[in-house]
Amino acid sequence: MSSTEDLDYPQILFQYNNGFLVSKVMFTACELGVFDLLLESEGPLSSDAIAERLGTSATGMERLLDACVGLKLLGVEIKTFYRNTQVSNLYLTKSSPKSQYHNLMYYSKTIYLCWHYLTDAVRDGRNQYERAFGVSSKDLFEALYRSEEEMIKFMYGLNAIWSICGKDVIAAFDLSPFTLIYDLGGCAGGLAQECISLYPNSTVTIYDLPKVVQMAKERFVSAEERRITFHEGDFFKDPIPEADLYILARILHDWADDKCMQLLAKVHKSCKPGGGVLLVETLLNEDKTGPLETQLFSMNMLVQAEGKERTPTEYSTLLTAAGFREIQVKKTGKLYDAILGRK
Ligand code: SAM
Ligand code: ASE
View 1: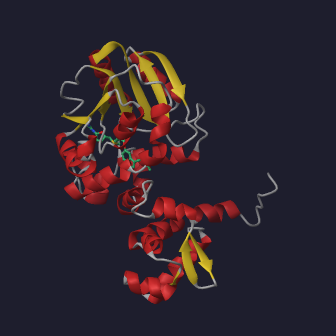
View 2: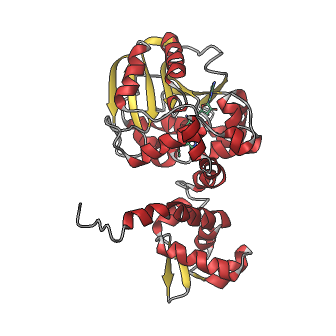
View 3: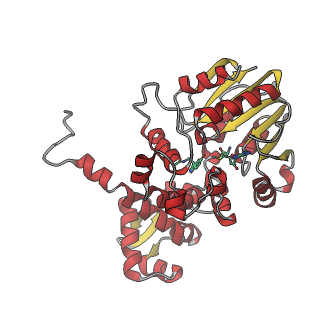
């Protein structure tokens, strides 16, 4: 037992017990626009002024702001004036280029509701769309995109992380020899944009389901960035065009091994000789003892998808079985890592 562990007062247990209270305080402050207001205001604001501007109760706002101070998401000046900290200015305001606002909102509005059924998910060994939302579809992405609003929340929510981790995964390997790149399941294009800015001589095509591609064109990828092209299709059912490199970012973790095999075999067939595949995923330690964040994400794949997070060896095995060779694993030190396989 380490000196910080005291069995008469189990700090760690209280901390874990209150974990979701912490999340909810941050989500709520974000949703109400506290950080946006404090960014726009010239100086620090009083609790009453914030409550009035955001249309909330004075008593509720004061408690929320004080909890945010405890979380170091806000600071106080001359006792009752609140200001953003550097972290909240950079990541919790909507207008920041590195904003995680949409990611937090997806957690608060969708993931939180799914996790209500975590016990059922563990019992059943599968996602809980039927229990949580009354969705009976067997098709995973029909359930994930159960309404257009839900699809948009997902696209915004998942795109946000690439403003923080995108460069590292794209720069993990020299991708300059690959000039024709397909981002399979490329979604809102956040990673494709990082790819284009690092490799301006390559073309990047986002391959995704038709309604996702239409929304990406409409709302996410601006006209100047039309060096990014689009391809509407279902990567399980429709042809995958020939290319030098296929990026699969957070695709394999959605699916069980048999579906991953089916997809990778198809990608291998379409891949030009000398080409490759780049997997972008969060990697478990070989003995699965961590990282904690990845273990939690794997639980999320249980409640929200059909897959799991995997170890480097598990991904290498899948790639090898599909015919890829010279597999290289690069840990970035951030949330997402990169694995390159060659044909
Ligand atoms: N690559 C993106 C990222 O990491 O931000 C998005 C990952 S998201 C978890 C999975 C993506 O695969 C979604 O954009 C989804 O629409 C797409 N997708 C799922 N099934 C698909 C299919 N059968 N054909 C093409 N795209 C599919
Ligand atoms: C998926 C990725 C995610 C499917 C559902 C998802 C994410 C959230 N929900 O492929 C992003 C990763 N974050 C977590 C908590 O898993």
